[in-house]
Image 1 (cartoon, rainbow, N blue to C red):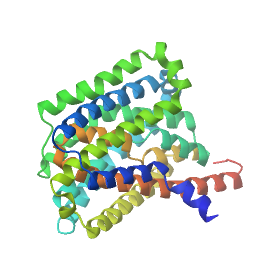
Image 2 (image 1 turned 120 degrees about the vertical axis):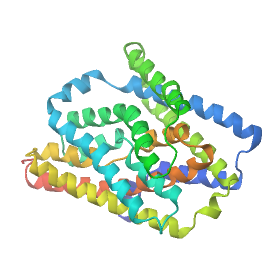
Image 3 (image 1 turned 90 degrees about the horizontal axis):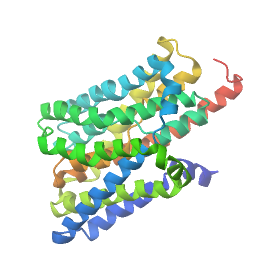
Amino acid sequence: MMKRFLTSVIDPFLLVLLATVGLAALLPAQGQAADILDVVAGIAIALLFFFHGAKLSREAILAGLGHWRLHLTVLGFTFAIFPVLGLGAGFLAPALISPVIAAGVLYLCLLPSTVQSSIAFVSIAGGNVPAAICSASASNLLGIFLTPVLVGLLMHTTGQAGVSLDALRSIIVQLLVPFVAGHLLRPLIGGFVQKHKQVISYTDRGSILLVIYSAFSAAVVEGLWHKVDIGDIAMIVVISSVILGIVLYLSGLAGRLFGFSREDRIVLVFCGSKKSLVSGVPMASVLFPVAQVGLIILPLMIFHQIQLIICTWLAAKYRREGLGEGQGD
């Protein structure tokens, strides 16, 4: 039973990710190798967003558009409630964590929701899967525009660098153009993408690992482990857990206050509480100086595992309750 529990809550990819961080700590890329790695990582990021665009189904989006109140509520949690909590954490903890890590906590709060895991948890819990597909896809699509804007507005106010014209140009070239190209080519390559989605998932994860290795290599060269200790990591765990707990509670409460069905409340809880590692890591490499990226994405990496653990338990709880109620409201 313990083995089954650990398998369900610990994402195997997280172990590979941690190994990548360890490799960067022992053998960081430097000099010309780092320059070549940056170019390769940039190409991988473009491919990641190209395939994201190719996987986005217009039919699925249209099928869920009727639930506009639900989708707006999910987006409100993703791009309004979360940022407020991120700002609050930064104001409450300046003496407890470094400003860069506090910026990382705020950054994770500005990211869009996940797609695959949100839909999977909604399905396990017995929620409205078509609506979850629509909400999660809309969040990811809008995040390409909204996250950089929120970074420019909110992280600038906390003393961090805003979004420069070069960063905006990089976002358009590296993220938006490949995404749009992939979506426009969906009628031609959609079948291929669907057939080889397992292989493409390795492309997604491979690009993230490249960015993480590049980011942590630069951070190690700049003295990362002299800036972060076990107390910082423990504080990130506490802050992330508190933020996630507040969002889960408020989303459940909002679902009842707004009169959503049980199935739609499940969508709100799971789609409104997630933050995307897949989108967050590449965006950070575009938005922030290379030497800061490792510290910026550290809270996101920790939050990612916490949300998987809590939501695995919560989805199973919803499923048991649904079976007990005959899936009624």
